[in-house]
Length: 269
Image (cartoon, rainbow, N blue to C red; front, top):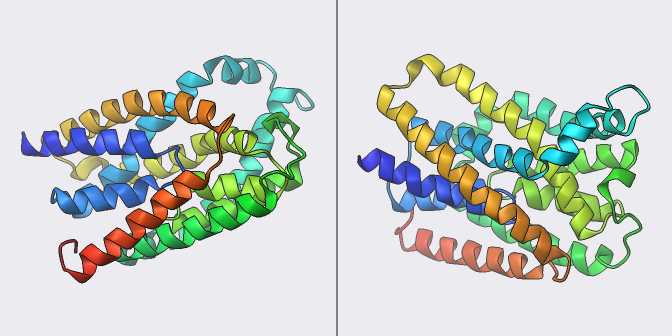
């Protein structure tokens, strides 16, 4: 029962943070440290329950996704949409394939997350101040292949725990001329293949090694992640139509600095 309660909490944390530019992985590591949810299963759990959040995006955009799948002939807008998403997916997929083991073994810690939260916050503030009002593209469908690739390059930053996949791709989008809202929507669509690949890879590795209780914990985390993320996606997009990203950057700074303080006091390890 204790494991299921922890899975319930972690699922909510994942759903709340996955699509906000504040690092879901970072928050899962932080909360996991506080509730003593750590170890090999916890690391795998934190990756796999992202699938729940992804399905929330699929459900939220189901109309656009189904319409795009009906227009997959070369030259059709659906084909162009998913081709650009695929181009953006490649850089992090390739680099992640060769670095995932090192990242899991050496970078999943409160200290590395704290540093990434702070660095990412500073980058968000600088990029929004410099490029936030200079955008030329206000619709993700207008993104071309070259810009898609550079957004994919930006997504590579998210391989470092605490940087945030959402923050990395939104910043990448702003750098190539997208509005914050258009960059966020592109980020949501890019999350579909990115996180499906990550969760599928982890499940294949761990499929036979998990106990029944661990499968039950994954199910609980998955359900809570889906429900919470579905709420967050809608609210975040509504927020971006009227407000800047800076509050998320300030939040990252506060959390990152607080984490460093707790680590120095040996409250978080």
